[in-house]
Image (cartoon, rainbow, N blue to C red; front, top):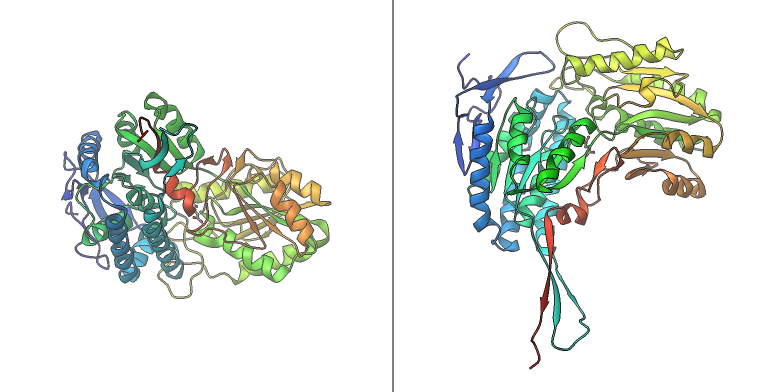
Length: 491
Ligand code: SIN
């Protein structure tokens, strides 16, 4: 396979290289790595495999570009972001196809992800103009006390494979809106969408060096270069909790700002007065979006006993109705898992639960043939000792457990070191309010299976992370405050 191999069906001019200081270039040592389709296990493309040397070059480019980009006006940045938004919308079909090919999610879902990704660019194009400072009343007449808000500086953005477009724009758009220059390292499993997005940023007029992209299969080495240099002032990461903890340790040397969106273990609490149609619709979204590979995916279905039998029957009917297959096949609703280890983890959770007395209601096995497919699965009689109750499954497994009183359900829901998203279903406003207030999570979906949206703050408590993305908070994360005391103003 030639070094620049791109499979038929992909954009033929996809720049499978590194973007450094506005130039697309191969890795210094010429190395490449392969990107595979999880539905067919076939190679899609070979992409430049950046090393420490490339990470350093990108860093120099971002530092150099910051001296100009950091002083552009909010209006200019807003216009570049607006043009990027339009370009993303215009290329919606191409981007969605890339997402489906490298990530596996069904095309309809990939189109939804492109819209979601674009919504962050649109939102932050507008928020760019609202990075207001403050004037604080002084206690003497000869002073003025000002608070300026300025770009934090060079930002390293390390993004995951489960939302190859949206997790990039949720970080990169606010960073650029604030006037930061960016070092982007997308996941090695899904770099193609990132390459296309970066190409669109360039086409939208994004200044050279404002967005630098290093694709690599050596994630830790590249990240170490950026965390080891105090000129990188902010690291924003979505991924696993252990990697997030490592980044916290490594950022200590230069006290770099961190935004960490880490693992989840979302409870899905169903009260016995819930609207079951609405609840099952929300279950479908929260559990089967991207085949369950989302940090906000529901992981533990905690059902009040009066609703248990009906909920279990409806969950079984739901999985029986889902069409599983390659994401480009019309009508498919659940694609493959991202890779073999990802699928094995779900199978391990199923086996562990069954081994400890859970009952298999539906599914439970890998599908034969090529690709990392797994039958959507339901297990009931799940108990707290089972792995699915305290580890993130990241797959299409519905694990059902019963509780009696609201306070028991709440205690089970909060019995987790994670705190990203939680879901609760009830017709009672009083119960809804009690649940919303008492759930120890950064995001609560009340009678709602998809709370994520560009206007709202997304982020977790406890082991699920630090900081917020999206909303007005998403821009704050890339701004430093500077207090200016201006004296001698007696006229
Ligand atoms: C994630 O899984 O990390 C993000 C999901 C979302 O934005 O809804």
